[in-house]
Image 1 (cartoon, rainbow, N blue to C red):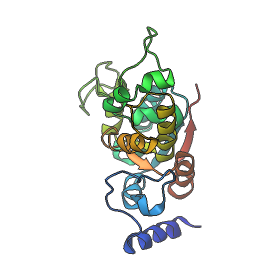
Image 2 (cartoon, rainbow, N blue to C red):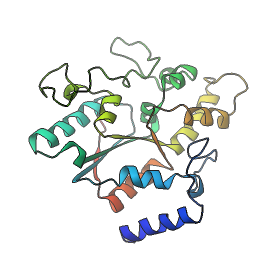
Image 3 (cartoon, rainbow, N blue to C red):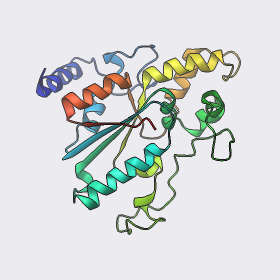
Image 4 (cartoon, rainbow, N blue to C red):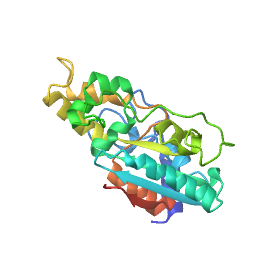
Length: 234
């Protein structure tokens, strides 16, 4: 299947109403997300925007060095190779425990995400919020790239987003984790896995893009949009 055929098929789906423009629950409430629940038009617009370089960073295990490597890639492409920032498209494909990068502080606290996954800080304390989210430095494109207090050395999720990176959230991971959260007693009494999944999906990090399944999405990004693949397992 050619990329043009793939795009044509999605356009036809949109024309027939198979693609939802907006969902109260991003991706819907089914365990397996279907095309009718997937905001395909937004997906195409976001990941398919014009770019000279496209990279997708995939990570399953929760390893925060991901963000430093992404910062290095953006800086290397922009300053080392002279590629304009708006010509660089980077997608973050976190699933498994790494899906938690896309969860808001509300989710981390309500469902004890740090305790559920055993995520600890450098002092050995269980993480109680998404400490990788907030920008540490001001957004200033004129900053010195060598300045540790400048935007180009900021490894936060917010700064990566401001620099154009797309944070994707795996719908399947959310559904599967919700079952585990309830089973582990991390959800408030009376909540079902469906309740938890719906709650998480409506309280993601601003700008997070919900996709049907991350392992499938990585394949789509590579085949139809020309993203090169970076797997970070350390």
